Image 1 (cartoon, rainbow, N blue to C red):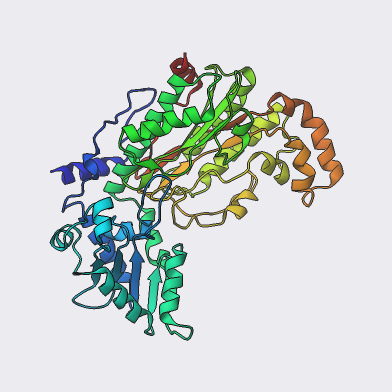
Image 2: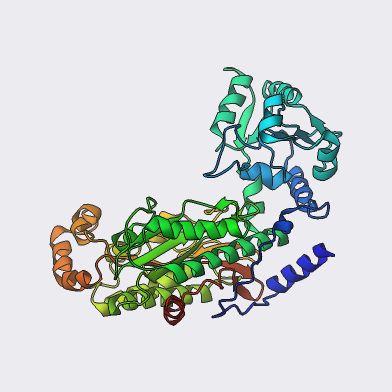
Length: 491
């Protein structure tokens, strides 16, 4: 029954049904990890993926391993994404082979066992349980599957594997020998496009990851005050993750206050926050191996200053304009271009841009494209229809085609503005090849007094958007972002 309820919810979402969230701070998340227990029906997703892969695998083999024995992601072991995506299996030290053998198209290995692992880590599933739960055509012991991989590597065949697992690639190449005929290709060639369109189970995990993250951000808004350290805020965030069943963050938490809010990937999180600072938090709980990616910026003392309010509202207006463009039939970068247009117009009106058609002036403030795919990776796989560098060269007056958005895609939208203390001093070094020194010097003279008003203000607002047949749904809608909402919670 649960399977059909989940499917019904997913179909409602893709048909354009929206969940109001809005300004409600009652976040629908409970301490209940039972949805992580896979049932035989939920395992059908993994079987379907393997079938799609087999249909596109005309010859050769797919050989993946769960992860290196010593592989950890911050807090604990985590299987490699491609291995998990195709098997649902999470035991370390295991291998999966997909190949042309009629009686064994899917082979899964038992993890290596010893008395030590039994004592320290506990036992894994017995062979019969593994067969029943994960549905391989056969299981092999660790020694048996290593011998089989060695024999395959010595043949004239194509082997698809995860090239990010460099240790395993080197292992395969050693097996093949210096004059081996095997060709090694990246499994992403076959799987990445499958991962772009999310299935019902994936959407459910992403939604819960977003809800847990929204809960963490709301908790911070209630606890934040001057004279706390950034790492104390990080402890509120990641403590909330653990409280609601997220084993770890999907990426290193960014918790930057004051001047650190202007550093895009600031990670030390060690500064003592001061009255008058902004606090930028770019965070994401991981749930069921799917990660949220939400950014909120708040005033440490609970009240935005006039200058902070001006920049914050400009970024928020840009983000809202971008979200309106995120619907099927539009282009991947339409949201980014809409946000860019709002920001350039706003900065020009504030006197921070003197020529709204100047590419280098725009790039000084807009440092990155505003969207990327989201899923098992925080920057998930999939073609965008162009390169980030190409998108960054465009002014709002230009149009550049990118990939068409389709229902089931999940992508972020995260415009931001960052007024670095030494930003103007760096202009000659950054843009000396794009503008002459006199032009840059005149720009510094014209905008300098205005720029100084906003020094050390960094604002980023990021949401996670599911494309639906009728438009989109904001999966991170429960994380407050309107100025009045943030200030009310922080009172």
